[in-house]
Image (tube, rainbow, N blue to C red; front, side):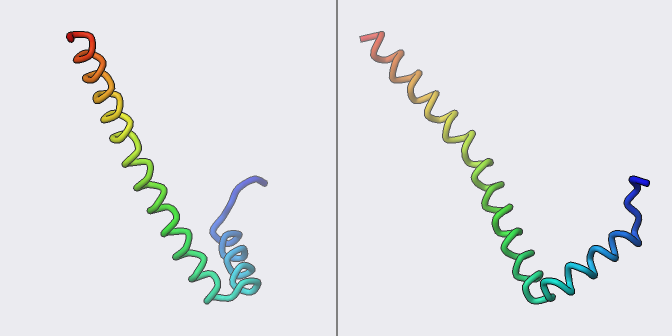
Length: 67
């Protein structure tokens, strides 16, 4: 009863095409792809900047303690 077969997926795809049209779905797909790429880039860049900030803070603290 809870299985998702290829036939059911095709029916859902046809309903989406009928409701939204191919042009709108194409635009939606490219917008979603750009959003995912931007999210991946943000996630990939974030840990590096946090690590650099922590290391810079530790270096500054150690040099202040030494003086």
